[in-house]
Amino acid sequence: MLRYGSTIVVQAGFVKYILPILFLSSLVDPLAEELGWMSGKKVTVRYWITDKQCTRDEAAEAAMLTAMGAADVTLNSRYSDITGYLWTDEDLNIGGHDLLAELKSNVGKWLILEVQEHA
Image (cartoon, rainbow, N blue to C red; front, top):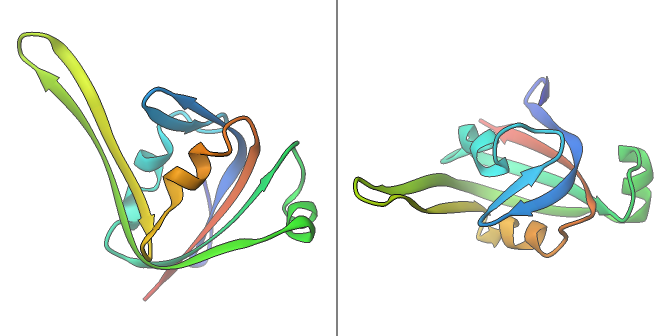
């Protein structure tokens, strides 16, 4: 991730869904974990989803989706002492918009994501 003032740019990556967690090819950790810092903060999220890898400007020309509001981000893994790993819960809601559901419906496409934090 790159920071420009109050704007964070997540490196563009290929959206992949490794059950049950959403990842980007450009990040090591799950997307919800990478964005956990913004939970409880007021943010604006701009993102572009494309069929192939392209620049931000190229994607912006095609279409821009914007969500603004309070962020609610969680990633919790559930374990049992007896059986080990059970499941993982992840949420990424911005102003009532379920961003993870939107991204999961676009697995196999490219994502460019910008997050701007508001004071």
